[in-house]
Length: 307
Image 1 (cartoon, helix red, strand yellow):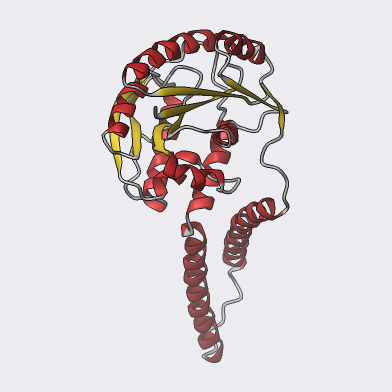
Image 2 (cartoon, rainbow, N blue to C red):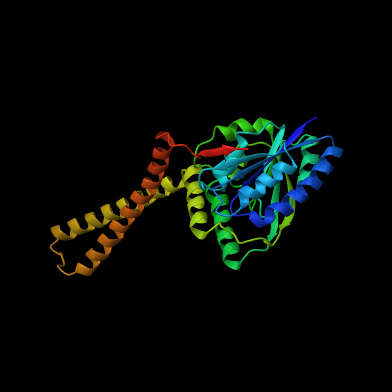
């Protein structure tokens, strides 16, 4: 019997775990009718509430469930990748614990997988999120489509079913990959399911603006060489303008038309050039930091316990 592995990263999701588990049990019944076995893998990403206790209750009710506890919060992406290390199914997916992505989509995704599709993505048609979150998401996905992957879904996606053939690439990926974008970049033909993202009913999001910004930098710097090329083009343009300006100054000096005035102009040009240099050094530093993190052998996550 084919098996589907569902990885659920958990971070301060105490209230949503019970209703999530109830819905997953209903989905398991539907999968059983399709002759598909369900493997549940929960990863406690250093939650400070009673999420672990709730997960252990779930394991008592369903002993085959696997619960992994990380030593601290490492982030949803890293928690999901940790869960992927324990996958034994013929297909797998990552499911958010907050129930904003309806778990019932799993049944339709499995149908398409059984029909031969190795990569099924669920794209958000609408999202019931705060205005600022929607604006940030629109800008972010616009940059992704512009600089990284041209055909990436406009609304992005978090929920996707992947065949086991894609699993080794995820398991062996680097620290700073963004899982949906990475899996999409592998080039497997995908099928799309559209849905409306639900309003959050349990707790509040821990996906802060700072975390979103860091994740955005990881995507833009980890998947694209465009920032470096933009820097090169800016450097070329500034160098050309500076050369022309220097030639103009030298020509005027030979012709005796040097004007001693222009202190404000000089300061403005120096400020612009220094600001540009500092910005470029900052971008280079971001790339170098990610390289350093990859080679210093510091663990991506620390597993404290496996239940």
